[in-house]
Length: 185
Image (cartoon, rainbow, N blue to C red):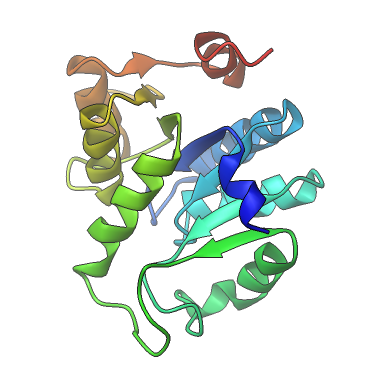
């Protein structure tokens, strides 16, 4: 349903090697945003992305996954059931033709699509070398809002979020902060 591309979208992104805290917050934000009528978008990756997609579907809402492969290949493979559920209740999008498997340079390309489609990007948890920072930088360059959750100052999984906040991303502590900033309620 291509009409879904016209929905107001917010991206939820973060670490593939997410902590329990990060996964809990990904689910919390996805649930609240989806319940408020926001179309949640992410990249179908392990960790934060997968948790955000799964929780959005659990609310009965639709979600959009931008893939770094052709649509006939699910990456990571353990997200095959999740990808099928998204195909039934949302959209799977890729600029890569069928048969193209995962390659490192595909994921920054995927991230630019996520940033371009979203009104804002919420970074839940990210290291300083996280692909999520690529998404956030592209979003900022496109004039989109960038939101970041703070965490313990000595935890490398939050160093990227802290860096984003230092660079002007909006510090958020709850989904309401995002909804208020974007005037969704």
